[in-house]
Length: 514
View (cartoon, rainbow, N blue to C red):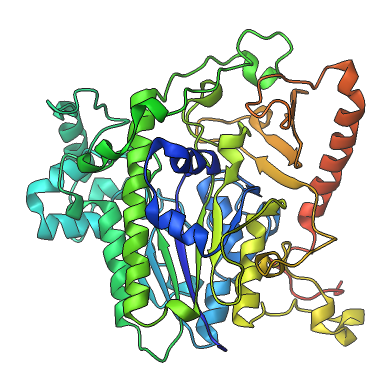
């Protein structure tokens, strides 16, 4: 098997914590369970920058945030940087981007061109809900066009003011639709704009549209050509809106209660939290909708695996299920993600199945999303282009100059004992969408037992995950834990420095040239 298939099944804003709760009885996930049974589950996969654009840039390039330069949403990944998709494309794989990619800001375009990043086939729909899916709804299901407009949370995207070939002012229509839109129904009176059942059929949904293009890509690819398919969903990113028929599969009695906001009213809490109040943005009904979205997505995974089997690709395909970042879902008084580095924010699911890998095993090692790119390269026997070199480096072998930050996970997937694996993960946040101050920046080190976070306003959090998995007791100022705190601060400083190793490739002419 010289050229295996690579298929990503990627979710947006799905925490490992909530997928574990689903499997523990909140809702059925038979297809995810089946994938877990024939693959390797990583229980400590930490996202290095818990927001969409930076994380997705890291997945594609294998570089850290500072190496690729996509600090936060609003930055664009430079197409000149090598991606594993481009490497595979050049080596003969047929590559497809189906759904959400988010290498470019939503506010730049609702019709982004992702071909320069290494994709042969693209069918894109992202958080803004404009673009190819919206255009398809207008043409094929015009009776539901206004229903889709009601979902658009960012009507200020400039393209909506002069949308499409006709330069239609869709912004005003979106505002008018949303002003009078009725979310509640007799069956689901708790519906709100932030959490509701879809008010149009499942087959019209963004999720099903993405799956349809994923299936078409698998079916239409020549049987003798390997594929790399990036099938990537917007859900369960908020607003949560599952098709109504999936609500019945969620057991409300098993939905966990939100973890309390331990920082609220605590004079010892980091300064970052002192001027904040618990938002209450995620109630139990929001959680119900979120888990129903998981059931809907599980159904899509089953369709993808069936299509791979029908195409005769099951035995030579690596299937990777993962998410870019988590969702607090009301834990600690917050919804969303970004600089609140609690477990539900930074720990994400990762399951890898494929030829030659162990089946039904769990690995507890600390892994990061920087590891995905080198893993795919080892799966396919490929390598990133070497770093440009000159001067003394001219005579150095390409293999002796590192160009990726992470490490391949295949040894762990094969069940091997790796004695020099990392003992800590690093996660960082810059400004959130509502923020314009470095005081909201966060830097975190997470080990198997501890989570330590530092904010620039001298605020700190230290949690013992072994005795306090819900992160309810901040030990940062506890004299009894001063030694642990100092050790983690030193470890964090080292990880911060090493974010720039290997040396950043962007704008590099050659190593050693002055």
